[in-house]
Length: 209
Image 1 (tube, helix red, strand yellow):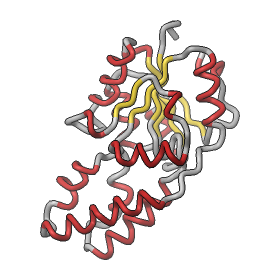
Image 2 (image 1 turned 30 degrees about the horizontal axis):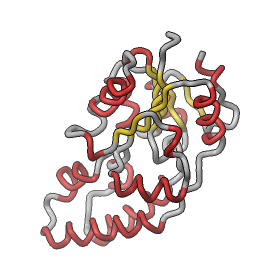
Image 3 (image 1 turned 180 degrees about the vertical axis):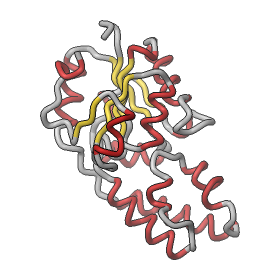
């Protein structure tokens, strides 16, 4: 690894353990709005505008508006427990002057809620949210933009991701990807990533070097 490198984090399923809550919300929404089966798995790592375009466009606009309102309300009330060990790992990276980016399909409203619940904003040298991109994961735009912000070659960036779309996005950007098995089992992602970890409890900066 080049000495000038950056570490880029997805949010849900990587920094905060929220995916099981999203599953419950979208399973319920899928039944209520008669969405396609397995919607809760298919949308992972996808921006909300893309979810609307790809999965909700057949609904009347009033139903789309209602579902989006319910989604926004859900995010204000959800629990946001940090993935075990991630806060210590972020602190270690910061203490060693490693450049850190947050790259998420969430929008700025969700990030404002997150940072109120989990005080981690100060760790990140750049943030790429859904508000800054026109192509969501698995397109590499978000990760390439983060690398550009930090002035680091994409090949010298390490990505932490949990979803299939997120992992593909990091790979498509030419970056080294570490997969977290918080959302998908290790067996299903191990061939797509550099290594798989269950959380950050036994993961340190030395693990990257």
